[in-house]
Amino acid sequence: MLRSWFLIALALAVAGCPGDDDSFDAGGVDAPGLDAPGVDAPGVDAPRPDAPGIDVGPVPPRVEIGTGLTEFIEVADGADVELVAGPQGGWHVDVALRLYGMEPMDMRLRIEGRNDATGDVVTVPVERILTTRRVRDMGDHYLRLGDQTVFMVLGPEEARDIDLRIDVTATPVEGEGASAQKIVHVVDEVE
Image 1 (cartoon, rainbow, N blue to C red):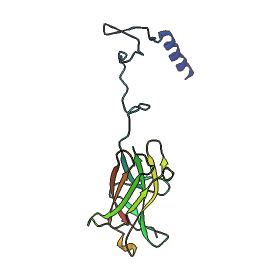
Image 2: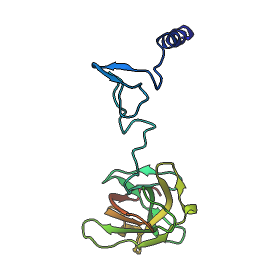
Image 3: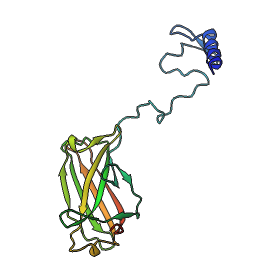
Image 4: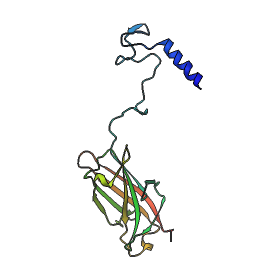
């Protein structure tokens, strides 16, 4: 392995690298050195915008809906999610969010659950004004954990075995907001 690196380094040292004043043959046209703006080296592809380390500009605003209290757990449309018995006697589904391309400070967040078959609102609408203390900066997005869709029911039998459409709207103070929806199937399997 060390010998391979030594041979590569030796080859580069012998070949030399063109400086700002050096020229190379670019198909018969005398062109400035490789570091000159707007000139590609012959046989070298331009960097792809999705390559690591390439800034592709601002991320478009979007929201991803999942579940989880301590981490974001991805949930596919139609997947089963557990009905949770809350400590105050109600029933809910835990909601986790990934927020992309939006500043969370003073963002208005709305979460609502509907019975997908009837369109009826079946959870207490949640309205929050976020602060940066209530989200986790993950580098390319903000993570919001701990929200719940609390059902407006007298007992768990009214909430189980329905397809719940979770609607989320995120409205930042400045810039464009985003909305998302996810349909999940509510199950009550944990006793």
